[in-house]
Structures are given as C-alpha cells and as structure tokens.
Amino acid sequence: MNPKVDDRVPVLIVGGSLVGLSASLFLGRLGVRHLLVEKHADTSHHPRGRGNNIRTMELYRVAGIEPAIREAASVLAQNHGILQAPSLTGAEQEWLFREIDPGGRLARFSPSSWCLCSQNDLEPVLLRSARELGGDIRFSTELVTFEQDAEGVTSLLRSRETGEERWVRSQYLVAADGPRSPVRERLGIGQSGKGELFHNVSITFRAKRLADVVGDRHFIACYLTNPEADGALLPVDNQEEWVFHAPWHPEHGEPLDSFTDERCERHIRTAVGMPNLDVEVTGKAPWHAAERVAERYGAGRVFLAGDSAHEMSPTGAFGSNTGIQDAHNLAWKLAAVLCGWAGPGLLETYGRERRPVAQVTGERASARSAEHSHPGYLVVPGAGRQAGVLAVALGYRYPEGAVAGADPAGAVVPETFESAGEPGSRAPHQWLLRAGVKLSTLDLYEQAMVLLTGPGPDGDAWHTGARRAADRLAVPLDAYRIGDGAEDDLAPEPGADFAALHGIGPDGAVLVRPDGFVAWRSAGAAEDPEGAMAEALRAVLSL
Image (cartoon, rainbow, N blue to C red):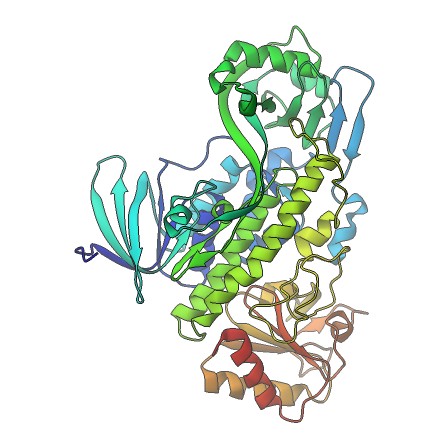
C-alpha cells in the first residue's frame, strides 16, 4: 500500500465513545497530537453506562474534569443503591445494597468517590475537554481499511456525510471501536470467555406519575421481578424520564421488531405494578451482555482498548470503567515512547498488564449479575461470590509488566482491598500540604515519573541519585521529600505516616509511574542510589 498521504499524526484513535474520548483526553493532557474518528454523527444520546467507579473518577480528577462531570451528573447525585421487588406498588421489596459507601469510609482510600453519570451526559464533557486540549475529533468519519509496517500505520478514512476519502499516516493506531471491532477482526485476533450471557432492549420513556410511586426510593436501578414482565428500571431525571431494560431472547427466535411501542408500554406498566400508568416510549436500543476477552491487546503498532478488547456483563459498570482505565494505561506509554524517554518495549507491557485485569474483572461482572439476579440472566449453577467490588475497582495489580520488583505469582485482584504500596499496585492516597494547599499524593502523578521519600537522612542521597540517573537516561522525573521539616517539599497531615503507608522504612524510596501505579520501591537506603534508580528506570521503561 503506497497511497498519497493526506494527513500525518502520531496517534490515530478509531472510536469516539467513552473510551476513545478518554484516550483523546489523556493524550491531550500529555501533549500528544492525535486524530480521533467516530462513525456516528455525535456523542451518545441514549442514557447508559452510567456508573463511574472510584478509580475512573481519580483519573478524571487528575485530568482536571471531575468537577465538570459531577455538575453534569448533579440530577442523579442523590441516587444510591439497587432495589429488587416484584413491583413498585407492593410491600415486598429488598435493597441488594442501600449505599455505595455507607458512612463515607472510602474517603480514607481516595480523594474521589463513585459518580452516577450517564454516558450521554459524560461524553459531551469529555469531548469539550479533549478539544480544548487540541484533540482533532471528527464525527461521521469511518475507518475503511488500514495497513501497518515497521514505521507506522496507513489508514483510509471516509466521511459518511460527503463520501470524501483521505489517507492518514500515524505512528500508532488505537482501536476503541466497540465489541464488534473491525480493527480486531482485521488483525485476526480471537477472543476467549463465556461468550453471550443475555440480551436486553433498553427502552427510554416518559411517565409523569411514576415519580409519585417511586417516592423517596432514589435508587440507581430497581430490578422488577414480576414473572409476567420482569426487567430493570433506571431513573434519568427522577421525575419524568426513565429507562427500562426488558429481557430479549433472540436465541429463542424472538425478533427485535416484536418490541413495538405498545408491547413496551404494556410491559412497563405490568412490571412497575401500575396498569393505568401513562407511558410514552421515546427510544429503543438493543444491547448484548457477554463475557469475552481478546487473546491479544494488539499487533505491532495497533492496540485495542475498551469493548474491542473485552466485553463484560453490565452489572456494576465494570466494562466501561475497565475500558477507560485501558486508555489511561496506554496513553502514558504512548507518550513516553513518542517523546523518546521509553523504549518501544514499554508498549508491549500494555496487554500484559491490562488483559489479566479484564479477565478477572469480567468474571466478577458475571458473578455480580448472578448475585443480583439480573433480569434476563440465566445463572450458571455453581457461580459464587468472588473478590469484593472495591478490590476489583481499586485494588487490581500488575504482577508483570512495566514494574520492577512485583511478585509475578501475585493475584491480579486480591480477595480484599489493600493499599500498601507494593510494586504493580495503585499508589496509596494520602493528603498532603504544599504551601498551605491541600492535595492528594495521586495529584502528583501524570506528567513524569515521580520519586517519593520520607524525611529520613538518606532522602537527599535518593534525590541526588534519582536526578542524576534520570538526566543520564533523559527521563522526566519529579522528586518530593515528604515530612514536616523546612527542607521538605510536602507535609503530611498530622499523625499520618508516609513511609508506613507506602511499605518502606524512613530511609526508603518509592518510584511511581505517570498513571499512579508503583513502579519500584526500596525499603531502606541504598549503597548506590544513582545505580539503583538507573536500574529501576531501565527495567520499567524498557530502556
């Protein structure tokens, strides 16, 4: 393939939903020029993918858009818990869980918190922010074909409005093009997993009187279990706008066009227990729940992210969060390689880190659907509980990849959440003060490798050695001493022990990656700090 190239760009992103737009945001924050193409004409108009977990919100916090997301999500800010009941009008009802974070206990682990923001509200925030950072984002534009070679990827793009075609040359291609990913298919990458789990039709509707019956039960979702008309009810504005997920059985020959407006209205009335409810159907969209993971997360200079790499049951919103975190993991690695401070081998760690996380998380998503008796899901006998939600959302590990000193036999997701600063784990959150301004340790991680030390007497040696090693290897590195002394850079909150939280002694050091994961640590002082740091940087960054 030797076409005349119309555009050149370091990174081409295919797909402009949550994952693609997040990839654009993260690359823009890191100063990486890129082009994103999306075949649809605009962002999503259908309320779905609404649960953003703590880790995702941490990433958006560091990217500077957490306040804008919470503003977009304000209408559902008071909605919590999942209710299960035969109807909304009967006395029998059970809260599968009432509060996501009862008592606010998770604040000790994170500066952020879970956020209920539907995809149709979140995507415009991502789009606006990505464009403000210079992202070239083109809707109604599809990828027709691509070829790659040792130096880059040549792609043919077509405008769906005008039919105009343009050839784009990029150094890398990121495919966030959904579960039926044409890019994955072209690469010949297979999938493994349980496959199809169940099917639903998502129905948007208006019903003014429904809020009177719901009352103060401001749930995230209500699983309605009437055998004549089961399904899941979700609020959009807690007043007139709602979504209902009705089970659909194409495996039994049930056609999609059988879901007429009249059938949907009748089903909703029966499910909620209000035979005279005025229901106005405003939209319908089929969706398929599956558990699949790509056998590889890319080939050569092409990488898969989000649904193109993994599909998960929707219960718990694990799929969208895992995809956004894929994009974050890949973005800093692309930036490091493109800017020349990491070797190409760093990009090979993307799949080695993220694929095992998707496998375990997908299993957990399926188990959670079973635990909650999700409408339409035929539970497989013997499916039991797995690791807790917090361990999956915040405690996942990278036993191997761009880390030095991790336990390769360690669990990808521990049974319970722990935050102890081990290599390959998310760096612990701790509140700090800098010139009187409060910030989290997590706010330090984005643009460079970061070295943290306590106030011990060997801190200066670590910092001097780290800067020399980083200068010699041309690696951007920030270094901070954490302590109460005048010579320290950051002060911990009273009573907080930085060293203990990060699993080191007073003379130890912790090296953290731009994505906030611990790359390496030393429990105590080193005879040759510069040599130790150089060795760690080389191992982590494939130098």
